[in-house]
Amino acid sequence: MITLKQIEAMHWIASLGSFERAAERIGTTQSAISKRILDLESVIGLELFDRSRRGAKLTEIGEEIIRLGRDMLLLRDRIAEVSSGAHSGFRRLRLGVTELSTLTWLPRLVLLLKETFPGIIVDTEIGLSRTLHDRLLDDEVDIIVIPEIFSDPAVTAVRIGEVETAWIAHPSLIDARDVLTLRDLVTHTVIGKGKLSGFNLFNTQWLKERGASPSKILIANGNTATIGLAMAGLGVLNLPIACHRHLIDNERLCLVNVTPAIPPMPYAAMHKAEKSSPFIESVLKLIGEIANFSDHILMARG
Image (cartoon, rainbow, N blue to C red):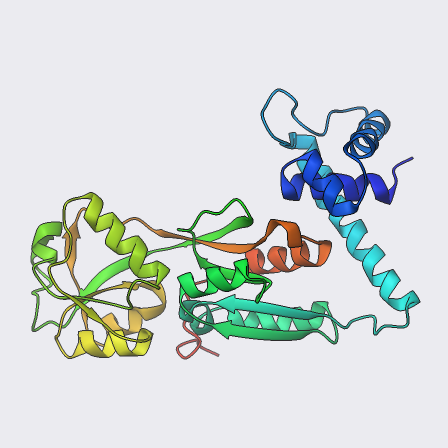
């Protein structure tokens, strides 16, 4: 028979990366954790962890079992809330996102969260990537969605998509018919949001690796401000292109033809590994389903 204790052990091993850490998190011994997994594997008849690799890595069947198992744990938690007299739908989620998310998919996510978890309170924080990452490590937010440029063993990152970007400028600054090398590009002032912006860190590092460090950088606070500076002809700007296509279509700005093109920017939803829970996993799943960086909420039709 499969038990919730076995599923719970599997969940924490997969989340924290080792049997030892899972035992500490649950408050039991490593041998007890190991026995739960062995018993579960005996019932299923297949190995759930790949023992030929270092660390606790799930097998393919293990990945499938844990997806189903986390739903079981989430239901267990809801039942416990009811039995304790708590409001069955009450939860608080502290969510940190960058400006791009607020301009695209965040409103739809909040509505979906309220439908999925009636009574939920969503506290949102809008900030720059480095600041949000630090606040996650300090337990001041539960989940953040930022460019996937920071790596920390205490943080679990789930890739939710990639964002296509492009260099843009005012037509008076650069002729859209010209083809620029990266070194040509950085002879112009590069507009950005500073060292705390994951978007800027990604762009700057990519340019630097190709020997094209900007000679002058103009820092502005916020997406609207950077676009305003570009429209004033004060420099070139790298921008998520899909949700800002209207600026090109209306001829307020033009695409700058640069070779080589900058690669898509990966975005991830992140949480502290030790704070993993069925609820957190459910929210991550919803974010993965709804996160679309292409549609600007002010430009959406209908």
